[in-house]
View (spheres, rainbow, N blue to C red):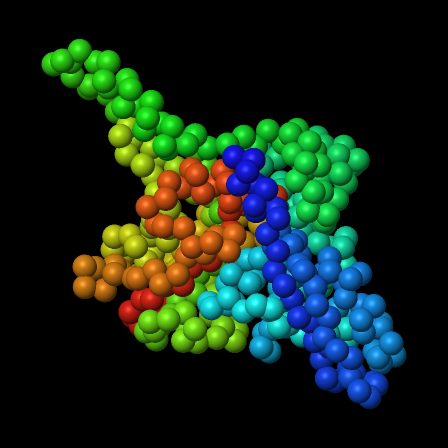
Length: 362
């Protein structure tokens, strides 16, 4: 498991950062900054590396830093690797981003007060994941300030050894591997006496904190390079929902099973609202919403029409599924994915492109 963790923590994206032309005060304009950004990190954390490239050409004023990609302001609290996986259907290397030091779009992005805001968001996500896994967030709440700081610094510096040491107190554990379960199950069955009936079906349950980013693609395309760009966050459906893994002996709960479980409105059976029920349903109970929330108001849960029906003739098609920069097979056991590809705050971030009939658009 540690070997896979090392690959995740070593993952990085080459960035080519351009200063927006409206903020250039010198001739010639400064060349772009070339930065190697950790996948598990966050864009605002790169500011100490980026600002020296542009400090001499900035106009007077107070820094209010934000990034954009092809005109789309980037949400600072989403890990850099997730932004790249979501917005670049065909990976772009280096990834060309534009940085702004002025004119923060507060109508589109929640405020970011530098590293403190990013740290606050990380710790709250850690509490949310702890609540999903253990039913409470006591493990995080009981961490001392020095332990929290050590944990945060391990993320900032992409130091896996320090992270393992400081996160051991969280007791997040791992999901039992379906491969191991299957092997154990086969061994037990081979020892059964001939004719002995297995009348009970043993099931094991685990909960995985998941953040799912769904882009509903209406146009059909063969190659990822032909995919239309995402020019608005309104095109992305955000699902912040715990995944409950139900295991039955002899069966493997796959990544495909997980997606269908997380998106019943697309992949589930037809469900009509009962009398007096609102025609929209918010994912998660009121208690879950209260305890498991994103930093941006209104983004903790996704509301979808209940009348989004899947039939044999119009099944949605998963065009692309990306986690930590890889595109795992849908038959991969979700237990392996959750144990090896989660982020430091214990969430599994999944980017999905789904082609659905226009009548089923989210």
